Image (cartoon, rainbow, N blue to C red; front, side, top):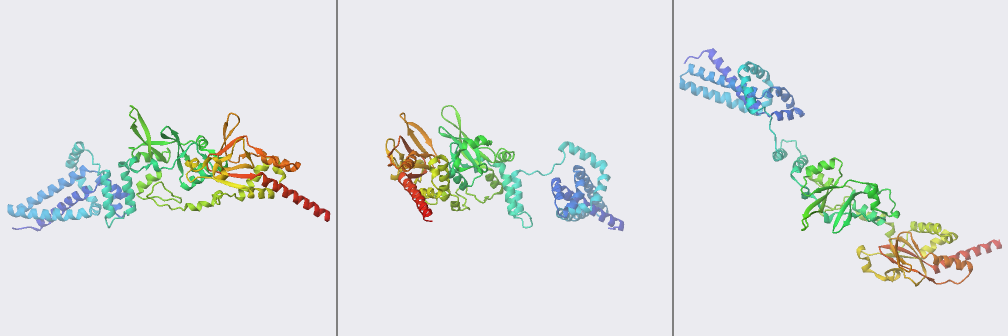
Length: 531
C-alpha cells in the first residue's frame, strides 16, 4: 500500500471539510431563529456572534441543502479515495472510522457547545460555500420552501413557558431570581384563572346603603376600614342592588355636621359600575381595569328562580389589588391595610383613631368645642340668650345633663330600651304629650321622631334641633317681670329613634344662672358707689 504525500494532504483536507460540514449542520441549524433575536437583544458577549450569524441563519433551507450536499460529496469522495488506496474492505473500515470520529463525533460535540463561536469564525467560509453550491442547493431549497414553508422558529405554549421559567429558576448558572420567576409564572397563569377563583365573598364585603347619611360616626367607620372605594347598594326586595361606587377621596371636603346623604354624592360624582360574571377570565378583567372601567368589579351569578326566568345575584367583588397580588403571587400591604379577608393580619392600630373621636371620650359629657358651638347656636337662634354672658352660658351647659341614648347593637336599640320611659330612666322618650316638663332639649347627635297635633302628625328632627325652647323663654320673662315660674305643658311627643346625645337644660338651673348674673351686677354697682 503506497500512499503519496498528495493523497495524505487530500485526505486531511477532506476530513476537515467533512467535520466542518457536519459541525455547522448541527451547530447552525440547531440555533433557533427566535433564540438568535433574543440573544441579540441581550447585553451578553454572545450578542456580537449572534448578530453576525443571523443573516446566514435566516437562509434556512438554502443553508441546510448547502451543508448536507457538501457533507455527502466530501464523505463520498473520501470513501472512494480510501478504497483506491487500500483494498475495498479495508477502505470501508478506515473511511468509516475517520468519518465517524473526525468528521462527525468530534465536530458535532464541539459545535453543539460552541455553536455561536464556531459559526462566527467560519461565517465567511459558509458564505463562500453557499454561493459555490448554489446551482444545486438553491433550487432544492426553494422546493422545500414551497412544500414545507419558511422556518418560523420555536413557539412555546403557556405551560411550556412556565416549565421553562421553572428550569431557569432552579438552574444555578441562571440569573433569573425567584421573585421575578414568580411574577412571570403568575402572569402566565392569569389566562387560565377565572374571577370565581380569587373573588372576595359578598358576605364579607364592606358596603354601604345609599340611604345612609354621612355623619361623624359613618365617616369615622369608613376611615377605620381603610378602603379607597366602597360599593353602594339599594335594597331591592331580597337583593342588594349595586347602584354605584363611593370614592372615599370625594368625602375629604364634607362636614360631618351637614349629614349629607350618600345619594347626593352618587348624583354628584357618577362612576361606572363594572359587573362581571363568575366565569370571566382574569386576563380580560385586567384589560377592563386598565382601560378605565374602574378598579373594582362586582361579581354576578345567574340562577333560575324556578319561574322560567333567570335572575342575577351578587356573589362577591374583585379589586385591582387582588388581581395584582395574583400576578405578583404575594400579598400587598398598604399603610392602613385592614382587609376583608381573615387570612391577612392588620397592620394599622385603629385605636389611634380615638384622637378624632372627641365626642366619645367621656360618656354623658360635652367637649369644650361643642360648648362653644351650642352657645353660638342658642344666641343666634333665640334673642333672650343674647342677654346672658358667654361665661354664664358655659356654666349653665356644664351643669346640665348630657344623656347618651346608645346601644351596642344599633339595629336593636328599641329592644334594649323601654320605648315609653323618659331618657332619664333609661327609656327613649324625651317628652310625652299633655305632660309637664322642666327641660329644654338640644339634639347634639342622632335623630328624634315627633308626633304632634290632633292628627298625630309625624316628623323627624336631627342634629342641632331644639325642643321646648319656650320653657326657658318663659323662665327668662318670669325673672325679668319678677313673677313666679309657671309649669310648662308639652303639646307633642318626642322619642329617640337612633343612637343620640341629648343636652337637657332645666329651667331651675337657667333661673339660678340668671340670678347669679343679677347679683354680680348689683355687687359691681355697690363697689362703684363706695369708690
